[in-house]
Length: 173
Image (tube, rainbow, N blue to C red; front, side, top):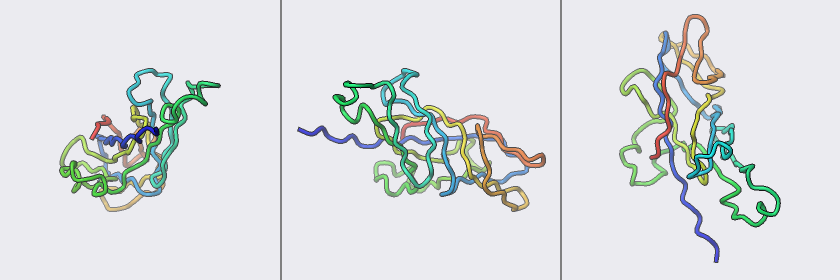
């Protein structure tokens, strides 16, 4: 009989950053998320893969540790994983009511220091590291925007304005 499909697990990316002459960092539909994921339930570094995740698509991960005949014989869930960005928290169900009103995709220095900026839906994997994002939008204190910014390792600076991620973490939601 076919095995039941596992429900996706949600992970939130929380960040805390120092903003210098910057009012907000925005992750848009054009942004790409650079993540390291590991096989769900594993702590083996060999079962980690780097993933470039476009905001509007899912990324497929194939674990390299399963080879040959084992690859054919093993369950697809043991060979592959999927991760995608959750764009709308209202779609993820009523159990997470506290999060449903939260807006995603923007970091400002107002409110909580550690702010939820993204939620990822994971099947067969869990995110363990965020190595930055591409194509983000920076808005400075004067209201000027800089688009298409590469936010490698959560850092950007142009001489007058800057963003430095002090801390980030993933939390299961």
